[in-house]
Length: 384
Image 1 (tube, one colour):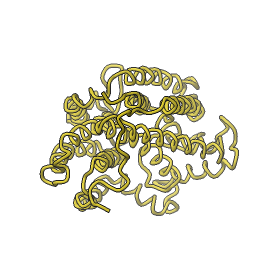
Image 2: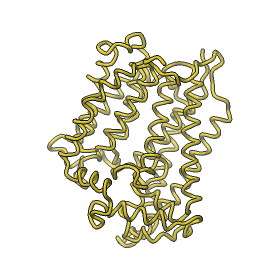
Image 3: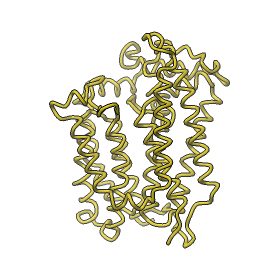
Image 4: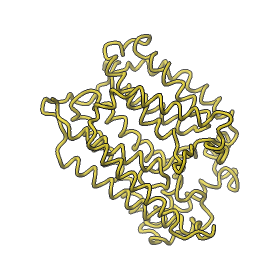
């Protein structure tokens, strides 16, 4: 097997490129199913805690409905905007997002970038509150794909092909890590690797780049005590069931108590002050508790099919840029979904990863719907 772009490389696009209509309809249909189910799950997971805080039981649901409406607009707009525009705007998009990431961590900006749970990840501009790190994932995919297309001939060279990516994207990753936001840093780095892997970067270059990752990751974990305690809790969840391992223990209780068919919609007991962040980073255990093994597996299958459709669109893309952004954007949803499920099941260290289309949160939902719109646009295009 050659060491550059891989034997499993996607088949070359045909002259009549363009995904079948059923692929686009299926992707849109599954997306809508996930969003609707997400709204139901957010209401179930948040109603009790909202009432305990003196708010209406549907407070979080109404906020999520508003975000879903914005996301629907983003999906529609992205569906009709030619994806090739993102290749021309890749630099401005990346620079704007990098500026937002810098504002989040600058001293003196705490009024618009407040400290929450030990991190500064949110930016409040007027009525809008969002996470620039979520936007960074999309911006990095666009920029990496655009430069990979331009540097196809030089991509097999480390100095001429790989180094430029490191020089530009390295500081972006540092800005995300400085929030600190370990999971977003790792996911963004994985997205870069995924796009470059698909573009034809040599395997030995990945191995060279992997050498400093271990020490850098260890330093990042050691510099943030809560991340270290989470790693230790992952290795031995029962060592501190009232501290760092508490959330994981409660998540596993929720998953295990669901049985085959679940306790029934709205009947979760773990959401009653037992499982923190039940509507956000730990919504999958609530789904498993209320809908049982059948519901949990159905959710997993939906994301598997969504991922398959995204990769199918990438395979049929009319040009290399379309193929690379389709792979990268699909990876954003796939990594988020399977990462969230793996974390809540105790297969991965506990860290903040929301479930795409499902978890409460504006930036994640709007971004996921916009990603779907871009994929639909790629799927509808044919080679000129």
